[in-house]
Image (cartoon, rainbow, N blue to C red; front, side, top):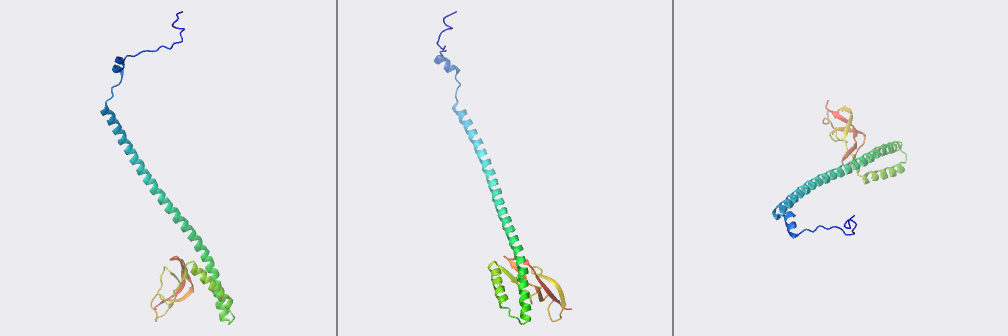
Amino acid sequence: MSSESNSDEIPVDVISEKDTENNSPKIEPESDVEKISKLLDLEKQKSSEYEEKLKLVLADFQNLSRKTQTDIESGINSKINEFTLDFLKIYDDFVRAKEVLSDSKINSEGLDSILKNMDALLKKYHIRPIDALGEIFNPNFHEAISIINDPDLDDDTITKEIRKGYISHERVIRPTLVEISKKG
């Protein structure tokens, strides 16, 4: 057994300066600059691609947001119009009751007050009646259910309102049922 193998010393290889000069890689500043420049160009391209993708995602999000808002508004307006149509049926019943009481010469002041409140409620929520009597028939606002012959009136003149129609926020929620004239 040799004393060298049992030693607590750690063997160290000594390299001379000559050896390091010959073994070290040569750094060429120009090639590193070119590499960094290529890497920078590559990162700029990636950055541009990510920016473009981000713009597309943002546009998609804005479109989805607008569509969702429109869908919500449409759903709310649909429910409001549905409620309004049910309300108008009750309103029509009150109007008919008032007419019957007035025709029978019975005091209808209570109904007048209720109808006045109902009219104020409709006005508050931008629901307005369609005035049709004497107008020319317009299928966007009127629904003809009867025709009379009258040589004194122009064709398609509305001679009678059978049921009042209403507009809510510039949309017809219920067309006016009308009787129209024909020269005939």
